[in-house]
Length: 139
Image (cartoon, rainbow, N blue to C red; front, side, top):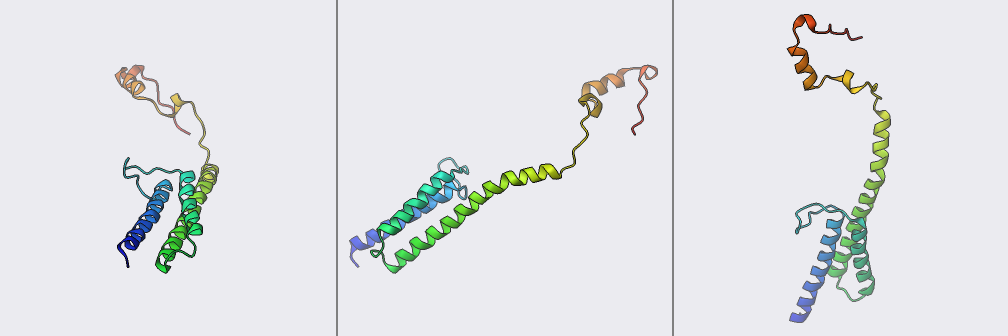
């Protein structure tokens, strides 16, 4: 194998891995190495996947078996992850709504009656016992 062919194979591999990493970062599966944070942009993830799809179509018949297997495997993996992320977005609002419906509705009392704040407690403690209001029996 010529040196130039080895170089082209390595560059092809690096190109595919670059788009793979970009798509995974945009899906929130990998941290962004620059910001060290999880970023999520499904539209950009789709662009990276589309670029690999285009590369597969344009290079059809010109790749070695190993290169074709690598490209096909990565595209399939990215598409499955993308569908998973899109489904998470669809389920999130449904889950929040269902959870809200299942939780019992607490009786809304005015805030003053729910729990005394620190200021009210300290004022009550400072009053002489004979001037304190009798505690109300809870029912």
